[in-house]
Length: 387
Ligand SMILES: *Cc1c(COP(=O)(O)O)cnc(C)c1O
Image (cartoon, rainbow, N blue to C red; front, side, top):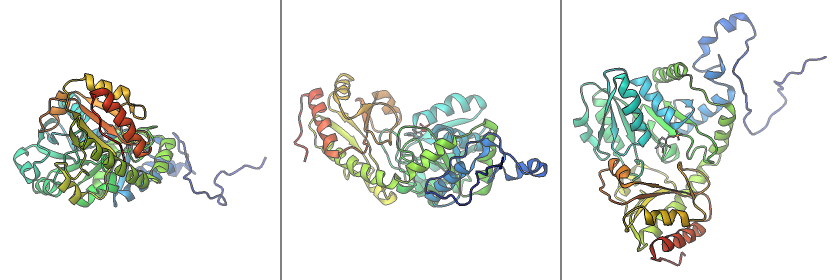
């Protein structure tokens, strides 16, 4: 029987090919024995990358404005990989006070027991971060806007202060994606994204990326990822590539709807505070405008009424918004955070539950209608009609 070659050169299509592999096979033993020489950019074993993996890694690096990307199983894995690569026992790492909660938790509970210490600095420290740097500080994390309250950081001031003291700088840029902000253009060494959120954008997988322009730092990340056994599936890479094709369109739409919702909530008599940097009245608006080129559909707000009960009534009364963690997908979501959680991550003092909305791709006026009926039911206060 004539053997059939799947590497047909006369086939061409628009979508990327999905190559699944644990074992990668070699033409001769010499190439097999030399397989480690192509560990960083070629094919040696399924763990270190397939053509589908590299196609996504190149697309992410291009979006980030250059460099090389490493793909890992989750956004959290990306954060942990940077820490595991840069830090050793005796080192200290600085985190902004509004950092993603699990990021802080991992330093506290995992890296702490390996002899790595950490401390927080105020989100708005700017050049003043200098006074928080210790003799053994090796790494400065940035997250702007921050989790929960979307507080902005002065990125150029922070990176300049860190560089002056020889620190590495990593930034969790999941909120903005490189379409809204490009960390590598602002002297950040490691640009981290939770691709789970907007990049994939369809709430059906988890993945993370780290992009760097420095070849030595890239190889360090790849080495640590191998030691930890990190690997991502080619099927998931295919889905993220599909998601990237509509990322710009989705973000523009979600940013427009997010702003419309934020503006409407800010006028509502039952609402105390609204947190969304694209809102002109937001405390971080000026910095956001100066640094970012695109917003998104994430926003938080508090009710004037204390306690969990009105928040529960509100969330349960929503019809279009599903209740769940995560954000950045096509479906609108609602989540709530207790006052103490919210308060520890930010200098803003609050005694109210924080409600977070992730605005999806549904019609903004229908979403406003849903919010109006749920807020009225929960608080007895009405605001409408929705234009
Ligand atoms: C969700 C999130 C992460 C973690 O991403 P996963 O892919 O869910 O692990 C990291 N940083 C921020 C700011 C996030 O919101």
